[in-house]
Every structure is written in structure tokens, then in C-alpha cells.
Length: 189
Image (tube, rainbow, N blue to C red; front, side, top):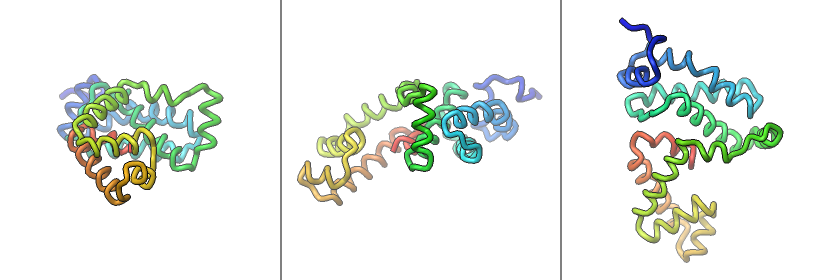
């Protein structure tokens, strides 16, 4: 029997998908500190960073059978970065994180330019093109122009309820079309 510490990432991913707990433990042992340091460099709060890393690894185990990971370390780091963005977006660390990013010259463009994000953006753009014309406009105004439901309704002369329903339908279709990559929808929207 091969020891998991001797396996490369692709072998570990294959075993993880088959619910191999030893492979999961090895992935955790191999990457938790790297993921934690990535979060700590921005948020500077040990407890929150540990929570973020734990959430990512719990999600990894719970969704192991649906994974489509090409490169494990970048995947985990990107997942941690998106979780951090959610924490920052929700306001708890917004001011501190902005100061840290400015001081260390970390920019959101780094996150936005990662391979996984570029691939996901491409998939979302392709998906958007398949939407009916009205749904496409609503989705674009919501996700790219960051307009509220009310603003979209006024601009397109629709009811707010119609706008909300169209966005929900589009997001459900997007999640379905992403399949194994649907994990990232949590972080984007």
C-alpha cells in the first residue's frame, strides 16, 4: 500500500474523489498552512483565517465526488481568496484589508487574473450568450453593471419581481451548466 505522502497531487485528487480519507488528510496537511498564510497576509486575523481555511477544506470533502480540479494548490488558494473576498465584502475587514492590500501592493487584479477565474469568466460569458435576449440584458445589468433590481426594472420598464425571477432563473441555469465548477458560483455571486 502506497503512503499518501509519496503521491502527487493528481493521485491524491483521484483518491479523494473515491472518498479516501487518508488522501484528504494528506491534502489538508500539505496545503492548510499555505492557504492560511494567504488569508492571514490580507486579513491579519488568525481566527477568521482559520475559519476560512476550515470552510474551504470542509467544502472540499463534502463535494469530493463532484470535483474537477486540474491543479490542487492554485485551486485551494483561489478558493481561500474568494472566501476572503466574501468576508471583506460583508464588511467585517473591509477597511483593514484595503489598507493591507495598498501597503503590500496586492491588488484584486491578481485574483481576477488567476487561471481559474479567467476560465470561469469565460464559461459565464459563453453561458450568458445562450440566454434569451431579455434575460441576457437583466443578467448583464445585475452582474456586470451592479445595478439593483429596482434600477434594472426602471431601466427596462419591468417589474422588480420579473427582474428578480429572471436573475434567479439565470443563476440556477448557470449553476447547472457549470456542473462540477458550480462551487465557484458561491464566491462570485
